[in-house]
Image 1 (tube, rainbow, N blue to C red):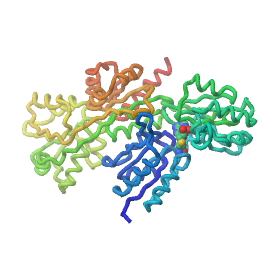
Image 2 (cartoon, rainbow, N blue to C red):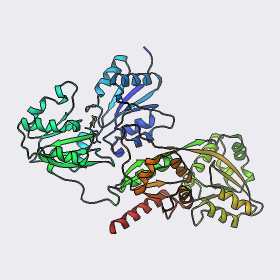
Image 3 (tube, helix red, strand yellow):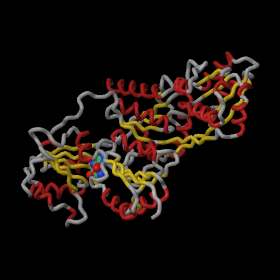
Length: 506
Ligand code: SAH
């Protein structure tokens, strides 16, 4: 038998990326290939390694969705070539996820596998809408059923009529397109027309919508609200309860689009989620590492010629120290060096390597950094500036104007991609804020985006990290932006909270 890797069928949870299990996250971080569905949050893919192969199998080509057999085949192929494969499935893999079929296909091939359960939308979408699926004195059981079957005539499960007799909660998945017939069958089976019904679509995501009604009027209400799949239908007395949190977080219900490198996105997402915001990845930046170039190695091997090292980004700090370690250079070779950094974020990263910054400008920008350097650097001193390909020219211009001697080495490039949803995939409908943490993020976003994105931005406030980013935004016609007081992730978050608070007062 061929030697193969191991496949983990991982439940991705219902949509909110924070509802992934710790085991799921650990496997995503470790895997060599991830095969994912349409209902899986894109943000989860950020956990995967940069070189992890990402395969989307939720595609609809015309009206043709990938068949289950084709998906099984892809999983098997990947298991034969990759040591660790994650098959990431919406909700729980075994709740109407066809996870069982994938397991059988793997078994047949003798490929080892493991199933990692996930939080199912059946319970989580209800919970986020404030509905407990059981409640003392109200419902003592819940039954999860499909509202769309391939087997039964009319695609409605026959069991619905008998299930109408249950006093417990009925939770129907994949039922929204059959809602009128489902309601009819339940009424035929003897359920009272006043029975409370709730429909929750895109539960636990920024696009969550809910409609409440009764068996008699829910179809009309759902039509009026324009509710679409994916949605869960909850039938029973608990559907009349609302246990949503009463204490509002400062950003609850606020939709925020995030752009930037993985590192920045992760930090922003974590802090914004803690404040109750919904986040969407609207663009990403990838770091291409050129720190292995001979010119940089030569500089690192002759550190004695420099007096200052200047960092204008956390990326530069990380790549600098990683390269030092690769070359086996002892940190004591840095003992005479003074460090200048652009802002508090970069200074914190530098501290992680055990170095205090000797210079952080009063105002966090490359321009102010250059000006303050000119005040203290002497004519005999030389600077080393390892930075990005597209680092701002301002820094160099100020140094040149002041005859400061320096060596600038471009050690990485930033490549941007605008996040384009697959056809049929949920689109961003409304963003309250869109965040840019660098000029390269702005270029990447606007160069790739289309007119529908620009339309979307008409009602969106644009938030940027600092003045340089703000200037780049105005080049694209977005002059009216919110700018963080402090150029850091914390500054961006504070800027949004403050703006949102003021909006609430108006
Ligand atoms: N394994 C998944 C269910 C897959 S079947 C789970 O455990 O959640 C797909 C159906 O799940 C959808 O048609 C819809 O009924 C439901 N669903 C999935 N995600 C949902 C969400 N975020 N909100 C509401 N319903 C959802």
